[in-house]
Image (cartoon, rainbow, N blue to C red; front, side):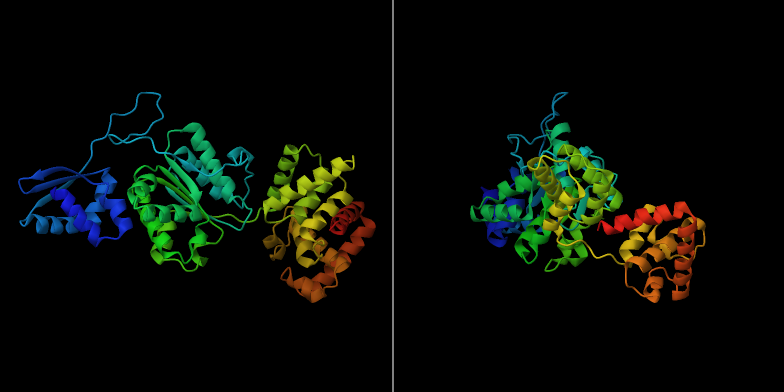
Length: 440
């Protein structure tokens, strides 16, 4: 009776969601001899209560009892560990296995189907580790990227792996919008204890997508911040995704921003040419589509950024080739891409510099450096020659692309023009690069 009275007083002084999350789960095991013994579901829950609410509980308890009351807080006893071979987690007495919340999963969004490159290697490694329960990269991961670069693929790959290897894991996978809707529903139904049980006490792995959509939603930010604080401090695994880098998120509580980025922040960039080529070959194989090296090269150079456009392009190529009963050729591929990306990109000095660098395996930084090594100076001269031939850029503008003046460009054009007329190897290289530029 005493504890019920104290709880009613706490209910009056605390917001509904706080009371449902933190006070309602407490149990009273003794209320006599000027002593009140309370139990919390686990040690992390107890630590949170001690830090935030215990002083308030003691003050109200003494006021209700009319005399100083000793209030102690312990952890409720847990059931014995599950039998060998069981995938179950330790449960509190009387509780049932919680119902998982998992968004519909794409069957191809697994680690095996994810193409790794320089643009995503860190995010992929961190997700792989968290899926295995390895905390080498910490227990909290924040991934951000533009749309179509693999955030959802990696997040769902984690869920697939966990469901396959540790089906007893208590996980919640949902969008930030779904989390917000669930919170509102439980507040209206006055069932925040159920909400707390789902996302706090009975959650081993929380995956929330699109947290950027919480901008301006202060109440949801506050609630998710509380959940994250508890899960991260208690060593549970957390994965968050956003279409915007954390530093650029607007209308966000600073404490919430700090909590989300307290672990590893991994940005995913648009895949580079080599990775785009591997993605195209991999997806073409899935669609039973045979593409020549020239077609793969053309697609990889024109389909940048959103990988979903690559998938759409390959589906279009497959469909048109089947309808016309013909193997894909350059004309068909160009026709499909024109509907996706419009007119081909205009050839300019930067595009030629990137093409030459890729062809000769030389970085842009090396092409712009002061190095005079033949392995660098020759591709640089080739690029200058092609830019002069295929664009209307001035000598000075071309030189600026390589940190050189106009006289260096003029010298490069003269050298390559001479070598092209006297050396078959140079002429063949120029012709190959020129054909690739014309394909654009």
